[in-house]
Image (tube, rainbow, N blue to C red):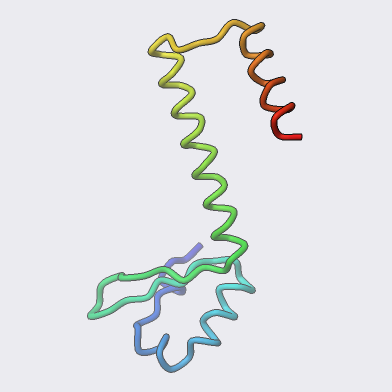
Length: 92
């Protein structure tokens, strides 16, 4: 991805917001908005944003799990199974 093609000054955003939104939505690529020559915002389509949020959440969960493992906060299989079954019962 050539990032230089995806950089627009805030004046273009003000003048052509609908066009930039269409471009981000159709290309599934971010549009970087600059102000005074510096990157200040990123415009992405909703689907890409949601996908990124889910991926970030998964990485956070994995990092917490790895930390728990390193610090010895583990459950035996039977204890984990009991907790999981209790969660399922309470959810339904």
